[in-house]
Length: 231
Length: 403
Ligand SMILES: Nc1ncnc2c1ncn2[C@@H]1O[C@H](COP(=O)(O)OP(=O)(O)OP(=O)(O)O)[C@@H](O)[C@H]1O
Ligand SMILES: [Mg+2]
Image (cartoon, rainbow over all chains, first blue to last red; front, side, top):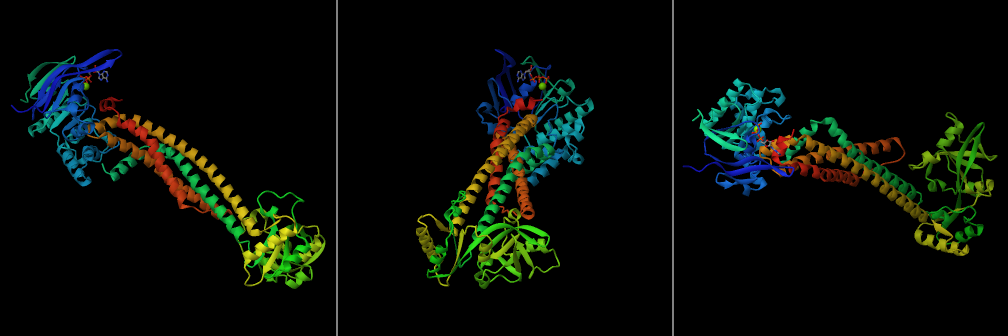
């Protein structure tokens, strides 16, 4: 079998609350293999976002190990982590997280700016991504001039612009109506078919079912796994 | 992210809060503008005073004055030494001395029919026009013969003539009075130099032969000896010998001095005053810059807090801490540099306005401009580094979750 792309080994995460420890993740272990489409489900507060932040190198486990492409993440410097977030991982958030004063195009260009790509090339690539998500005619709109579905498409274009191997999405359809949500999941399915490894967090079983594997979380633990219809 | 992109990004974020950015700039702007303007006016004034003083000395005349007049510090009335007739005879005997005269200064009311004008009286030798820097534009200057014969003749400054006679009357040939003494106007004089003090002292002068004036006002002390030197004489050497002899004669080694000593004294005062002024202004401008800098720091801290989530988003997209630090630092330096540049413009403008609308000439020095600019860059860096560092050290998750 191939090497896992992302592997969590007995990961715990806790926060100090007063003199107590609030444990948010408890001994979580699982692996995601290249090209997989995984979804994570669980009730609110079960630690899904926390898990995704660790997978995305935005946060560190309190104990246990996270190994990305065979490399333990805790050995990486701040700049290396920034580079991983820039090149290897794309994020999509529930509330889009677009920069409000930048046009759709400039938002999509942003990861390329931090990757040091020259202006012309940046524009060309950002336009291509926006075209793929069907927003060619909205490139100079500001986020507040876009609908929720359009904002999420811009966010997806931005997550993909640096051609990351991994796409992490935290409730990408949470702020959208069912039909728009399905459209976004359609885009994800297409990306999966092109070989992108995808982890989607959701409340919605319908959304989760797009994945190959569905992991269930409860109170900071992984409590079960089933196959989705994406398999 | 390269430099020009950083500039563009900072610009757009400053433009997003135009009014706030402008208000933040104000402190720096005022600080820098005041540095530029005050230094320009101060240096211009100093330069003008010095040229005005330096141009006083006529080439072939040595002016000797009592040291009390020359040295800084007010002479005590009554203690001021004056020249005696013997002093004049003594000096007359020197080789290299062509002629000796004296100058008298005072105030008096000049009367023509029912017009009365308070004027400055300057009396001296026939070369008074060189010593006092004027040319006769109408009529003639009084001559050596007029001086020798104690003739009652006078030359009026254009301003005084205008006030006494109005337009349409030729003053030359008319008779005016001072203290009841009639004087025939023989000429009208125009000043040949920019007179820094004209607006303060007035430009109404009446010039008389020294002898005539001495006849009218015998109680005026003779405190200036004007020695015309013969061609080919070493002026400095002669001056030194004259002063030495006069001092011996007065039984006082410090009795008299060449007027050039006076110039040095005044220059020294002007220099001291200017440096004190510069220091005071520097302190004021420094305080303005500090206050401005605190304002910049405050706004940058507000901006970091407001944009916490933006910082988190940028970090999630791959911004390094260094990139975040530079982003905020560029913004704060941009604020202060823009403030500083506008301050330079305003300061230069203010100096020009002073230059063209007042008799004070002002000289914008590139050093002041450079210092102003450097100060604004430094303020931006110093006051931006803490907020920028605060932004760069945010935890990505805390920043992303910030509401
Ligand atoms: N900085 C923190 N300090 C203390 N507790 C925290 C902190 N961040 C998160 N938590 C807690 O961790 C738990 C898990 O949060 P998380 O956001 O991962 O939940 P979630 O499964 O994504 O929920 P939701 O479906 O509502 O998004 C919550 O109980 C939350 O209160
Ligand atoms: Mg969540």
